[in-house]
Length: 123
Image 1 (cartoon, rainbow, N blue to C red):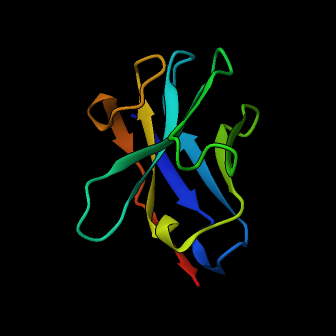
Image 2 (image 1 turned 60 degrees about the horizontal axis):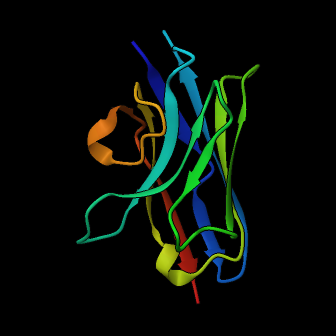
């Protein structure tokens, strides 16, 4: 099975930067899409960004486009989320997810999830 291990969360000031990492282990497939989602208190888990291992396609939620960048290192089997110009509204638990569907941006299309890492942005 696929296992995802997240790291990199923390407390930063508004305008700061943070990089999250998601290391995948176990059986993986070239068609698998890796994504980042976040969930703030009292809110549903929402899509942030996704990337395809095979095609290099990336997808972003509108509010993070231009500020966040998803990338991959296939040799390390790791996906990153570089977050710049962080805002207090970015505060949430960030989850790494794995999907068998190409270009998946919906929570329901993801089968594997990491444990989540807290990102807190202070004003």
